[in-house]
Image 1 (cartoon, rainbow, N blue to C red):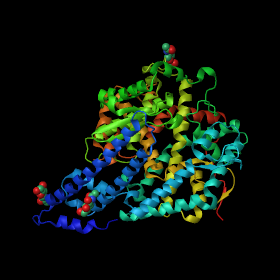
Image 2: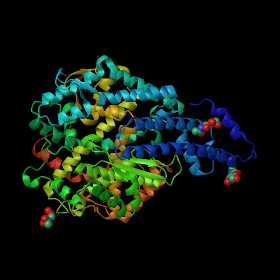
Image 3: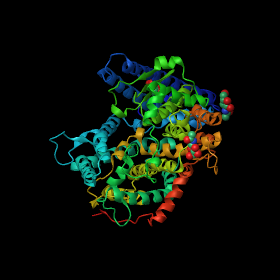
Image 4: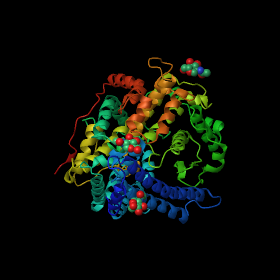
Length: 629
Ligand SMILES: *[C@@H]1O[C@H](CO)[C@@H](O)[C@H](O)[C@H]1NC(C)=O
Ligand SMILES: *[C@@H]1O[C@H](CO)[C@@H](O)[C@H](O)[C@H]1NC(C)=O
Ligand SMILES: *[C@@H]1O[C@H](CO)[C@@H](O)[C@H](O)[C@H]1NC(C)=O
């Protein structure tokens, strides 16, 4: 990776301390490098602060050119800093350092992913990511070959939103093809992907990784991490297969024209549709128990009556963490660093944002008021709490121990705050539990949301990694992809395809960016349920075998025991291996599907019985719908 600094550093480290013990000298020189990097980082944080202030200045348009320039400046400066620093640290003789924290800092920052690329390659990688982003969000598609009415549409959010509301299988089918055709005319999508993989491989060689995926999985720091992810997929597969079988049966009544082939796999546009309906209030697929009395109580009206304003929602979410014994957000924070987004910013589905510029942390929140936002703000508050602890750590270790770890902690609070027990505490529900039927309907919706998504994260991640490592060759991309869909998800293409096509879905393209990788999403879900189970056991709110305290209605609000574990993990930042940190909560050092399986146990039981009654056979056989010519 490096050019100049190599020689200079050898000189620095060669400085004569006693021949027999260089430790003190090495540590001194290393600390000097890190101190000077920290002060450069402070100027980047200063810019972040400026951006936050610019965005929240009264009467200013939020998307002014100034902000954009500053954001680009932050990006460029961060890249240069990390790139140089990695080069400088890569010659530090780590084994000679006594201070374990210093050693860890050097190890973490001496290796990089895309940011380890030389400037020209790095620019190209960013260009390619911009291009893949435009596949998803660019206005590219004319579904009916006719763009006269509204002009071309973007996959996200326009087509996704249109799909969500359509009961015509033809529409789903046409949109599915139209988008793929649009982005891969002249093989654009495929060649973008190929170029990008080439850069990922180069980044890996700079780290000395013979297997490129070691760099993709950099901070998981595990030989063959993919095997660990795959083991979890197989662990939850029995539950997935029952849900899959039941959904396949339900699809026939919602979309009679969707040709669910006799082999039992589900057509990809239908699977997308099932997943896109997860937050949709009037979803098409029936929940297990029909009838008005079994419907989930609507929280919307109560939400407006009780929580009234977004500010009040924020306070409630903050209070969740305070009840656990985590940081108390001060009045000063609310006065200076908590700001409402502009109403027109981010659209109806805006996402709150947390800013980190030590010594301060700031929040811009989405002012919408609905159930989804209520849940999401709990995740945002988790991130904010995490940052407050990271403030105490040295630059470089002030991050999560691996990507997705923080989101997993957020997930636990999202799960707890969405329980009837917690909604009752907030006076949004009148009862602290649902009837058995309602409860099952709720688990079913949660199950679709989680269980259908997890294998897709895995497939997208595995495809990328297998290509990167050379296990999938360029001539076989598409059929290999359908092979994975068949093996891990029981999903098939809506009609015959071949290796000239390139059928990956839009979430795959999103996941090409390490910041939003499918690995990270997978980990956040799985680890999230593992943590949730542990916090619930610690708080006594989950008592295995006791029907009054099932895992799916566990609210660990106010539990100092759970809070202590969360705090301890957050405080560590990246100072320890993520397995050491997860062990604090779970007592385990490996990913496992146990949290998910215990959470959804009542759903699993019901599905098995129901499928038997309906004479539905779970599972599928491969039908060769991709021709390897
Ligand atoms: C080297 O020196 C440092 C500090 O002077 C000391 O802590 C360390 O134990 C020494 N290491 C060896 C191997 O002698
Ligand atoms: C890396 O080392 C070079 C040469 O000593 C120095 O000029 C540069 O500032 C260092 N950069 C970082 C980020 O450590
Ligand atoms: C709350 O739900 C339980 C279980 O369904 C039921 O027995 C109880 O009567 C309900 N309480 C109220 C106040 O509705």
